[in-house]
Image (cartoon, rainbow, N blue to C red; front, side):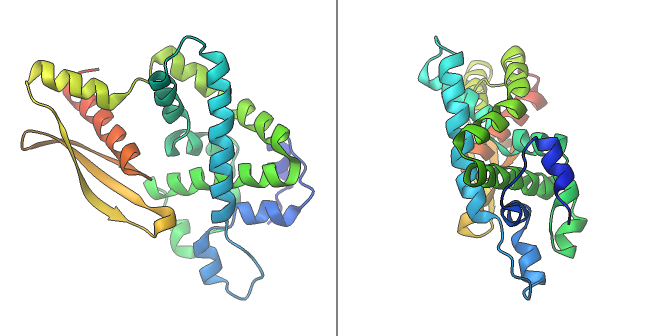
Length: 229
C-alpha cells in the first residue's frame, strides 16, 4: 500500500512511514495476516483521541469566551465523536487506505463509520509521535474548523438529552429513562445500543462507543421522530 497520496492530501510527509501504515492497520487485518510484522492501530487510536480532545478543548475555550462549562462540554461532544471523525476521515480519503480483513472490508454500514473514526484518531496519534504536537494541532484545526463553525451556526451542539427531557416533561409530564439494549466488543473497543423510554414506550435508539454517546444519539433521534426540534 502506497500512502504517498494520503500524505499529500493530509499535507504531512511522515518521517516514519511504518508508523503511518500502522495507523491504517485494523486488528482484523493482523488476525488474518499473522506472518506479517505489523502492529494494529489501537494504541495510536488511544493516543490520538486524547490529542484530538485536547486540541478541540483548547480551541473552544479560546473561541467561546462566554460559554459555560456545560455548553463547552456539549459542543466538544458534538465535535469529538464517531460521526464527525468519520466525516473528516471520508473527506481525507481514509477509506481507500484501510488495511482490513476480508470480512470487515465487506461491511460498509455503521461499523465502517466507526472504523473510519478510529483510524482518523490513530492517524492523529501517528502525526503526534512523528511530527510533534504543533503539527498535530494544525492538522486537527485545518480539518475540524469548518465543521465547528457549521455546528455553531446550526446549534447542533445543543445537549439532546437535556432538551428531550425538557420536552418530555413539558408535553407528556414524564421524565425519560435510558436503558442499555445491547453491549458488544472487547473492553478497549466497546459498542453500545441504548433505548430512550418515556413511560413504557420506546421512543428511539442510539449507538455509540460509550453509553453517554449512545444516550445522546437516542435523545437526538427521539427529538427528530417526535418533531420536537
